[in-house]
Image 1 (cartoon, rainbow over the protein chains, first blue to last red):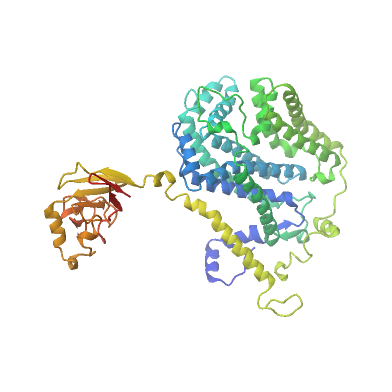
Image 2 (image 1 turned 45 degrees about the vertical axis):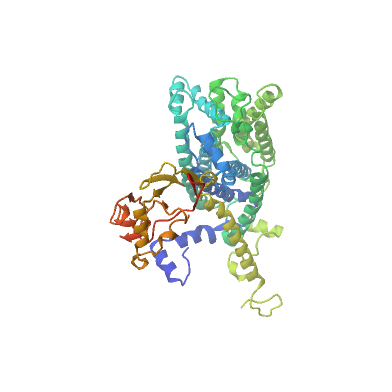
Length: 418
Length: 178
């Protein structure tokens, strides 16, 4: 784990503060399963998204004014007057969407390859907490421009808490700092929107600490049995992650430069008016599936409960899944219901974007039912009666058979190749 | 020394080239990405739009100084008396820490009575007090710099004369600063 160097300054620092060996341990020599595919890029991409959001956010905060009578104008000031303000704001706004896109893929990857199972339960939990904080942060960030969607989104989401029996109304008024969404609400949302990303950074550190304890899962879902199963993180996965980052940056830039408002809503370019609700209000796309679950239930309190339950059920996943095999690759039945779940989540998103009536309501209710059926019934049952396909004896043996991956001596001396 | 594809030694390998090309392009990309984040702190367009002002000077009587705000800074407009102009012109340039003749301090040669200065001490940015100090011009209360009736530093820690902004007269009654 130590590092070899003749540089006396590095040695001097290392003796007192082991930063170099820590970096070396977690980013360079870090042993990584040699069979990770491109779905494993999305963890580092999520990290990049978080950093991009924080940097652009800090910069936007230099020009934004969190006051009900100035917030909308200061947003337009950023768009028109501030040097590259349009670029920074579009990166930040679309960056939130990119962040969720990446994180959702990251989550479904974990779901497919069984990355939540023993011994990675806390790693999974930390991820869910990060997701919850991301939702809170994104929601509060969307309120800041103080457009019509900001205002009414804030009104609707905070009113979710009014569903709590007895204390609902006092809690909502406490959240608002008044009797409706107003300046006090905006100020506290701004403060928390600045704070929470740094809480997320802390949780990401813990997420990585938990990850490095038992190393990454892999597409085969079997444990690392020895050095023949791993390759060093650098240069193999640094290069792979950077390549993926390049592709991701093209998609990101495509939105920022060619369709910066595609994922937004035009009503948010109308200043907030507490007296008029827009005809059709929807949350941002990344919250639509949860919004659809909320609206599928014809009871206010139970709708809110179902919506929160749809996320909290994920905490139970490591125990709801009774299969001893991690990867869906070897689980013929689970694999099929996994894709059904994905389709169901996309359908919920589509339903959430449309008015709660007719076919949308029917589809929404079917998808909501399937969502909970999947986690609470299918997962435990399939684990019992499914007969998994035989697992390969090791990662190394599997890679050698297919002829892919790095050369056999890669881990021993990566510098040996010129 | 790196070996070429066929075993012959080479000064620089393809890999060296790739490292330098990729690193160089990466540095350019990082710089291009960083620029908007740096430039956003420069004055924004609404600030730049306020970079010139027009001032009515018809009401300023001889011997009077007014202070106007230009780009967030005070600008002194002084209608100098004959005595003040003469005093400023009588000084030997050799006596001055920052030698400048009085007519170089006045942009309109035919209007030597109008002295227009940025009212920011060249020491550390305080606003000097009008009609004070040992030379009848300005005195900076922060660290004791004395300026004369031409706004030139005469005594104290300030290194340079008060700055003369760019301006032009719009007839006899108005001046545009900036």
